[in-house]
Image (cartoon, rainbow, N blue to C red; front, side):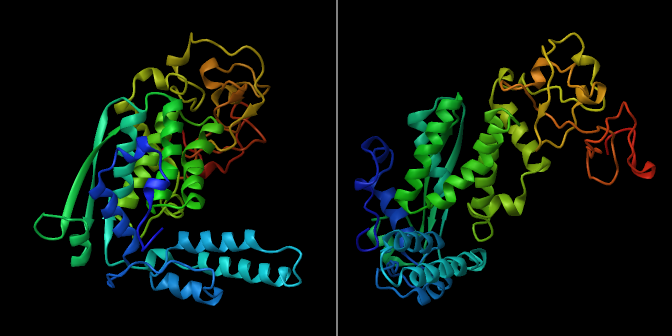
Length: 371
């Protein structure tokens, strides 16, 4: 970084740079480097910046949380392990890391914003990686500082400028992984997200659920889009590190993602997970291919009980579509008795018994159908 402006031409591949006009890069760069109401370039952390100043710089918006974490990690790696002061220096750095991560960044207001900048970047990148139906996202840069507008050579009236981009959805798992990987390092290069926040977000929303075999990948890609739309709508409240925790990853968000995925992807993507086993199974499941063998492994994170386990506790009787490639049931091996005190579609889920043996849940909380 030089003079508060991102030197992206040294950080990004040429094929990625070609996607962004010079003007757009300058706007994003200035949005990154100008801090609340001051109209001056961001005060980048120096090696000589005292650790005691980090929290103050963060709360006064002179630096971002990502910048603070990055600099502390850099100093930790640079420590001389043979020095007599190593233990004390490491202790101070860890204490500073704890202090800055406890700052409620959602309450820190910025005098400007980059509305949709991240989704705009994702949409631009998808043009070279994916081919599918598309959504349009805009980068709307708003700023009261005249020098920023002069520097971007904007000829538009007022202080607003909008740039549109179309999101092209990935058609396969490989395209999605390539898109998210490129998206992560592009955000970092443009100053729009730190890898320590971005990649854990990707893992929590997309990769970990896929490892657990919960839903097809299009559902989790749409879930990622939904979370980022919330971040765009309320940037002071949500960011990569807080949006999942604050909005949750339960049924409400997942159901919205399922609807979006089924709207934009062929039915063939969802055949393996449709027909959720509820309450003993449905007639529509009869005659479908059975899984050969016993199934003892199951998805411990699922909130839906397995109908096959409730009919046969030994693990037999599973439909092939309800078992993943590792021989693990996609649902929870627990009692599927409907109950009233666990919210919508709540189930007993006790592993001590199945419904066939007789559910021991309090009788006044049992229900013969989902709420």
